[in-house]
Image: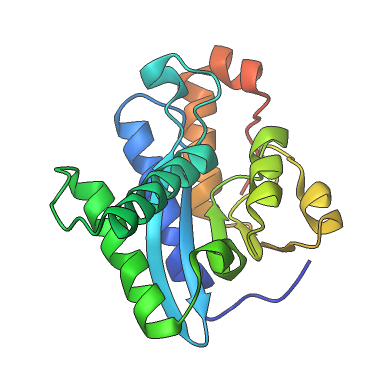
Amino acid sequence: MHNKHPNDRANLQHAIDAASTSASQGGIPIGAALVFDVAGENLLLTTGYNRHLQTGASAHHAESDAFLILTRALDSLQQRQGDNNNDDDGDDENAKVRAKLEHILHTRGVQLKDLYGHLTLYTTMSPCPNCAKEAIASQVRRVVVGDNKTYFGNEKMLVDAGIEVVTMQTDSCVQLINQFVDSRPDIAQQIGVQKVQL
């Protein structure tokens, strides 16, 4: 485990806000954010939230949602660069993420192939095995976890892969899960989360 960065709390709040969005939709309150953080520049690229209950897709986790949004924007950017096409594709979220990526490419000289090595994944809860594997495969630099008591995920897997892991144990992350456990104990038991004391 490693040291917190000055912007970790603010960046984790983006993931907490995403988790709150899921909760407001009747979903599992887990959120994630991908942030570019190099040489003092801190740029939120994407957020995602668990959509399992909303979509019925059991693998639609917060971390995978954030990675999927980023991957779509990267694919769109590469396609546009190859086609020299500057037409808007009509997807506001994709266009916003793509604009942030273009900013990084032009101001920081980061190559697309190296982008993930400059990212921190913020997640409200310790990642499950599949999300940990996705973070490893993407080669993110850091993972900041808001809560690892309600669900103990695969932080060791991340550390063993050379990813810096920071645990913040934030009350607001725990409260979101505690409220979910109270309201949906059947689902909470299925996914392996438990209520903990603050």
